[in-house]
Length: 52
Image 1 (cartoon, one colour):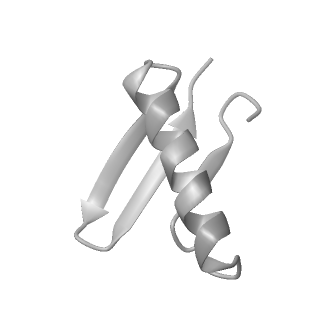
Image 2: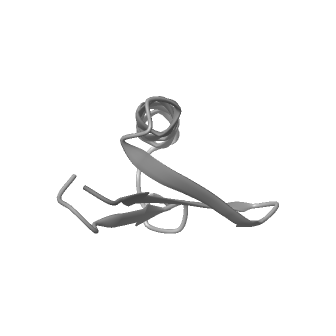
Image 3: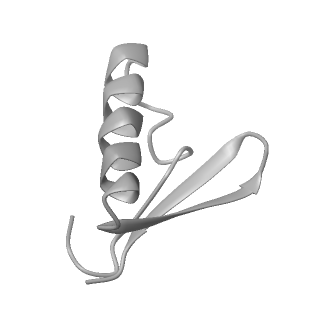
């Protein structure tokens, strides 16, 4: 991810189910490490933002 790049669950919608799960797991791991910020504006949407 580039600085200030944004990924959201809607951006992953065109991916296969396995690709979506893999990407979400990777982004959640980065969020746990503090490398990206995760926001949940509602129950079905997640947004990951790199702030470096």
